[in-house]
Image: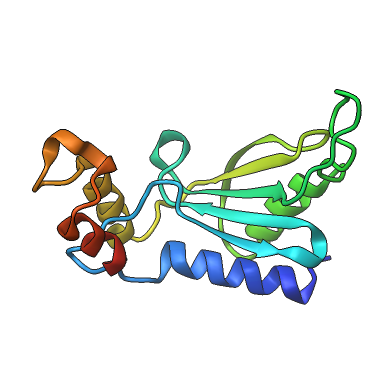
Length: 152
């Protein structure tokens, strides 16, 4: 069962992916946004341009613990990735595929529906790099490049 805190995280992230119109002069890094859920030791990523250029929702253990070079002591729970995929389906988002999950510290859910067209365009502008300093690509720190990032 989804907690109210996780529901709020999913509401926020999915709204950003699918409902938030991005300005025509904005760029967005393709990894998207991350929203923490500290009480559960989780963070959730909302990537607008992931596998096969489709959105991906990622669950991560926020603070993994390791002991003596063994696998993580606090991985994702068995079934946690499946439960996330089921919750996304319940909300009307068709799942394309999943990967990773228990016993790893991260799991990913690829969605079928593309992100909002203006967000996809913002990611494409990011990939194009700085038009003022093309030799710097996405690593520019000029005022124009920072303004595009701030507009998103």
